[in-house]
Image (cartoon, rainbow, N blue to C red; front, top):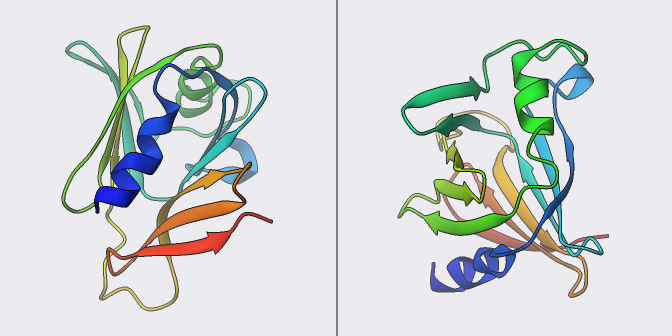
Length: 145
C-alpha cells in the first residue's frame, strides 16, 4: 500500500495535458499527465467529479462525444493542475485540482465479478511500469509497453 501511495503522489503539481473520455470509451477515462507526458492514469471503475457542494458529472452520465456532460466535464480538466492525491485502504482515489474540482474514484469492481477486470491503472512512462488495481484489491505491477 505504501508503495502505490508514493507512486501516485508523483503527479502532485503536474498538469493534465490530455484527457480521453466519452464517445466509444463510454465512462472509461484516460489522463495524460505532465509536460512532456510522463504519467498515464486509466480509470475503469465508478467515478464522480465535484466542485464544492456541486456534482459536475459522474460515470453514468451521457458519454456523447460532443454534448455529453461526462465528456465535457472531463475534457475541461485539460490544463488543470493536480494539487493533491489520496488513496483509501481499498484503493479509492481522490484527486484534487487547482480549479477546486475533485475527482473521486470508487473501486467498485470486486472479487465476486467473473472475469479479469481492473479498477484503475497508473503508468509511469519513464520507468515503463504500470500499477494496476485489480478486482481483488491487489496491486499488479506490469510493464507500460
